[in-house]
Length: 223
Image 1 (cartoon, rainbow, N blue to C red):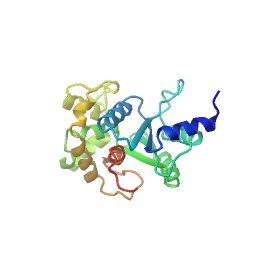
Image 2: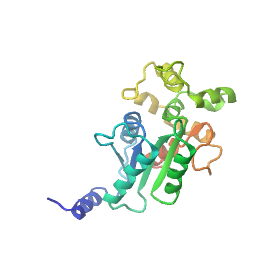
Image 3: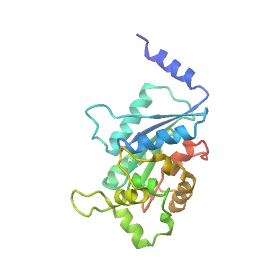
């Protein structure tokens, strides 16, 4: 059986010319589908994207702390290079400020760790490919951010809106290529919504996923 140091050397040999981007997400399927397609669409020998999966028995454990633990566990197993990046893709909607603050503080103290938080959720990032949310009135933006359900068993507002825009949408099955045709405009719309970029996460309506997307596309500025 190969030892841990041997596995580390093999990993660095395989990707020694590539910057490694490791992604752990709150969602089980939606983010994985999107970033797998993005990495394939913008294939670059200088960038290798690895998306972590939750192990059996922890499929429903999606708290920010657990997403962070996935990345810390990965960091403990593999030797990282200085330009490698570990990304948390999480939502604002149902988590407390104290919980998010704890995670954001730990990430701010580690050069490898970055937070791509969406307020209220990842579906906002997907919708920005198709809808110019920067032009919505404050009242409508508030409706989007509240992301309410019409009834107990109904989908949240943004999932319903995304289904309307795409014709069909499910977390584990959607036309991601339809969205990627508009990824450039989504980045610009998200950047415009990010009015207080010094905040550790978007305190109001917005998403920082665009920063991770730019990194995958190998065009982000030094963070």
